[in-house]
Image 1 (tube, rainbow, N blue to C red):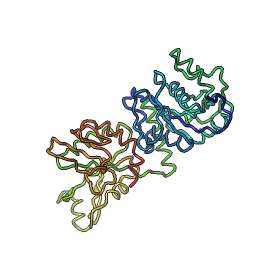
Image 2: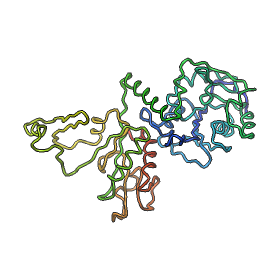
Image 3: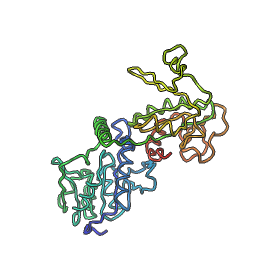
Length: 373
């Protein structure tokens, strides 16, 4: 192991994702901000800057990386599932300087990373200092820091700052602590959402919504499953819309009402508006494609969940229920991203009928893929 970091080139980025933050009542790595989970945002930044990207996880922990598939997973080599364990395990695995990043940072900045990298030459550790505090989960650690980490872990100690005395430490001053804002509580997450929404409004930027259809044969339980799925998606911070496909036609307005009379008199489209609801009703010469509906009516949403649209949907999750008398799934092999079922039918992403939380997590880490349509 070459202990001294003597070049400005750090080739490895390590995302510290061993803790799920379940004290928040949900996996904070999967909380959605600006159209991506915190986990995906961190990995995307590291992939932009480093040749090799890895993610540290607790022993035996499985992490669905979704859109970031292909990133190396480094299990913790010591008990404790602390950030110190993750960093030491990364140094043990690669034997080269690492840039480490906490998975719960809301606004990690490429410019901030570059500043730290530029200052790290010759240092055992290089960390930002903002508002008087060191930021040990956003910095470079060279192999020379590894022995001190091991000594701490062997004593059962896990505070990263305890390994810094005796190391060649470079501190990089920052006047803006935004890149180091981490999400430890739901209050932190609400504040991160507020900041990101304000930033998006100022930039005039709005991502197209991700789009997934829940499909299945008649009486398979699609609507029932969607009723369970929507609250779980909301728990991950998503703004969610829904579309129901009706192949037979429908009448949402009522004959005799003023709004109905507007349409009957020749208005090709009309709106019914109240202080709490709004309905847009239009006559169509032909059915609107699902893609157009999502893009036109759900701008600024994280996700649109459609029921039906087996033929049109670019991304599908099937509900297949043998108890309803069905013998085989609706989708052919390879057509459905996931299968929600009461059977043992083979599928790489199979979920039980009552595992709406698992399906929500599966969707959350694939939002980038689901925006491709």
